[in-house]
Length: 382
Image (cartoon, rainbow, N blue to C red; front, side, top):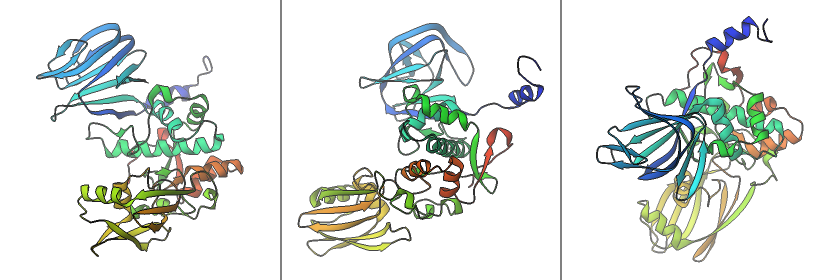
């Protein structure tokens, strides 16, 4: 043994290489500001040709020109650039600056816009996600459970998106990712203490979805997406009851909702009534009927209605409708799509001294925890 390193550890390090996550951090933009700390190089990823090596850029502009990409007033006649740095990247959009670890890829897309992708190691990526998904003041066991869910979901996406330009986005349609600015001391501890741990079902990685509050019952994934998985079937979750984000109420002007429906292709006049036609096992709305003042009726799924009105306005699909003339109230329970881990339920369980493994076993039944670094050829469920 030399300096505390065993032969076993050396072999482990040599056979394991941490996966790289490709995060779309800017989409459909015409330009952005760029600052680079320390030494950097601008590379053609296809040929590995190094176009430029230097130290530090401050407040440079990245934009398009007819034949390629312009960086700090220098033209590169390519549609794909990679910028590798020793100390990270700062990106400015609309006066807001965000710092990122790793490298960035810049693509000139066919629609005349820029796509910017942050490439970094998996565990670093998770540290940039966790604080945006839960509070760093929560119990450590809740944060550890969230870290495992984030890692599992990310590896699932890495396998599914190998042929795409990126694996995940930095918004609610993947996972909220804030880069280096989002790293916090306690959330980073949670990532380190669960390093490598993921959940599998029958030896495969599954999409470990999560949400803010289940409203008392998590959702069956088949109600929303094309999966039929026992770990995502939905469970009764009393731990979420009475917790923040459990109950909500929103008032809407009928004419505003009519306008949104019309814009989405659902032609209806002034709304007179909204009727719940069917609920699923979790209590969430499967089908609604909207009736206008001429008597016209349209049938629409609860999922589509929520997407049209806005997921931040309709917090979940579990609600009652109270009509009030030209206005109506939605009185609901839960926040988010409801599938998988309930974050506030996990918080409550952690306060009750459940371990992160207990929490994960409760919300993702029939799963097995493994260390992906020790598993070869792990595949994602189709």
